[in-house]
Image (tube, rainbow, N blue to C red; front, side, top):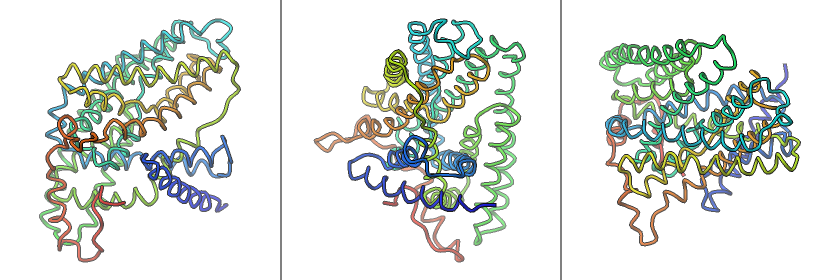
Length: 433
């Protein structure tokens, strides 16, 4: 057994913090620094980390905790209000990138570009479009939390749309893979998706009743509620992936929504905020940068890569922004929603890897996809910062006005005051520097 993972963790935490502070000095979100730290420490630059398997597992826990806390900090009433809008935004945010990716691949792909692919050119081109439909909301969530904009109207619409986008992405991926692999049956996949939400609803209701009953018996030692909530989050996340084929982060977000209805939600969120900030979130964001490699690029592929990155950004802004506009969002809010859906992150990499294994994508296109993932992931928080910036006259209100303070925030001091005599009081989420 080696202990190299300890040094790896130390390097990641140090670099993410230093670069995070550096990017903040340039008026950019600190998450950009964490992403750059991964790129610098990874194979693209220094390649100094040795235990990447350990980093990958920690990063998976990191994104689960991130989405769990996002669920706990979400105003369910506001999320319900944006439910219809979120569906329309997600639908437009899938169809427009799908069409854009297909058109680009149609213009560039050909028999001489199909190395490693066994499916027809039509399916290969469609699959490039499917990759562009993916959205990695974790980057957006962290950026909005850092700016204190997670609970705005646009922030809630992004969260809702990202969950629906995940489901629509699964359906699109299943349709394409079922056409290439006869063993995949779309009917069963759709049935599993529906079954997951039924399961999550029943499990959540039972857990909520049990949790509320437990609250009535234990008033002072609240640490057990943190552990119980985390166990529930991990179980729902595991069941989502293992039994229903739904992303684990979707299960984590739903678990957070269920916990948000309890009286202990502010206390639990504050404890997870500490865990996330000190360890697992920096590792997760750095791990995305670690995936960055520099593949061999021909002039033809370089042009394709540049166009793919441009289309990846524009189709999400146009598609999701159009969906928001249809739902009576203001122009500024529509742009915020579109920008919030740009990041592809690890979701697109997973989809691309699966498609390459099934012969749906040429090996020559893996390089452009990786570059697109990295660029969209890095640029998303920068554009979000610009999109949510207050106007020069100081009136950042109107469309960007923050939603009235939720019960989660209102009750924070009540939850923390006098109910946990065994531990030090902690800074609430969003109040740290």
